[in-house]
Amino acid sequence: MSEIVTAAMMVIGDEILSGRTKDKNIGHLADVMTAIGIDLKEVRIVPDEEDEIVAAVNALRTKYTYVFTTGGIGPTHDDITADSIAKAFGVPCDYDAKAYKMLEESYAARGLEYTEARKRMARMPVGADHIDNPVSLAPGFRIGNVHVMAGVPAIFQAMLDNVVPTLHGGAVMLSETVHCPYGEGTIGTQLGEIQKANPDTIIGSYPKYLDGKFWTELVVRSRSAESLAKAKGEVEAMLAAIATPA
Amino acid sequence: MSEIVTAAMMVIGDEILSGRTKDKNIGHLADVMTAIGIDLKEVRIVPDEEDEIVAAVNALRTKYTYVFTTGGIGPTHDDITADSIAKAFGVPCDYDAKAYKMLEESYAARGLEYTEARKRMARMPVGADHIDNPVSLAPGFRIGNVHVMAGVPAIFQAMLDNVVPTLHGGAVMLSETVHCPYGEGTIGTQLGEIQKANPDTIIGSYPKYLDGKFWTELVVRSRSAESLAKAKGEVEAMLAAIATPA
Image 1: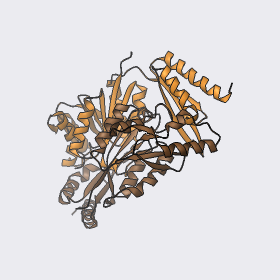
Image 2: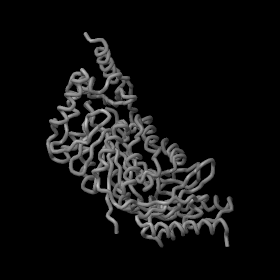
Image 3: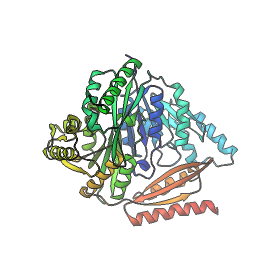
Image 4: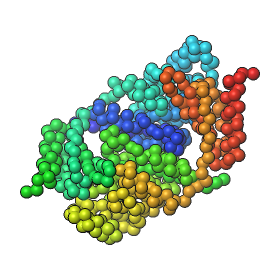
């Protein structure tokens, strides 16, 4: 049995919960995790409230190999992620000397005042490592198995690119998609039998509805190429039998 | 103080966590909740695993006024939402007589076999009420404060339209958006002071990054029109003072 590496994501921000901002980061993280063989097992979207962030990150970091957060690390009063993560780990949140100096020099070079708000972006839990931000400088951070990144998609994606090489991936989940021109009701019973006969695979059935007609996308997944090929063959044989009844 | 009505959402499905399907329902529910004065406070995306679904729905239904779920109510083996919700409530999951008959007649009228898979869509926790499905007939259901709906966006939205009139909304959260041409670092300190001076409002600051330039969307929210107008005025005065320094 291949090693299973798991992950959870925490999206932090009232603006997602109110509908004002539509999340674009969950789908991106999901794609990246799948590509490197890490199973994303849970996502939580939580408000900008310290108690909620602390409770969620503590629930997730003890259950999964990795946790990834987005949002709440900017300079304004509603950016409370760094403080909340520090609290969850029981460590102080303070100005990080390296981040403080880097931002100070950057603002000086641009002729901008190093305001209290801007200084906030240098705060992180004591003992955290930086996650470099090539877009707008202010770093994210990693503490334990928790990776804290920005919510702005361009910055989140750049930060995640810097995190991926540090992760220990698992065996990549292989997948094959089989187009099924029938609705789920037609194939559901037999598909369930194929799933039972192929316990080393995960067979997903995703109903699609377009212009009044149902069709189904069938996805067979496995960490074993042999198991995948066997199950896929059985799914295709099932569909062929429906198309040409005996 | 106005009554606060809260909600949580649970998105059920491996296909969202693997990145294969990009969720379109969270943003829609968030918009609808905001429009009717219900605070969406948390979203969880969970896999097609009974233990995970049971644990999440029990955590959410005891904490929030309403819970809304999407996904996992189709006819295939990976559709385990009805069984899981029944287990969470400690009641049997069985064929609902009304749903069973409705589907039976519909398939008969269309000359289609009423397969075991199709019959699965008539199963729900004993004691649940139907949520009508005008798109593809098979109903969702409500049990206690939990509303179980389809994952296909067109069906989810149609089901939600049928649920909304049954909900008890709170005082609608009013909001005003102020465009801020500066980055958060410029306005963060003063914005924090305005937030402190206006505790009856929630002031959100949403950094935007476009073509190498930062700007910020400031959103002032309150259930009181007077409080909202006062805080918005102070935000606008702050921006005017930056544009034209004394």
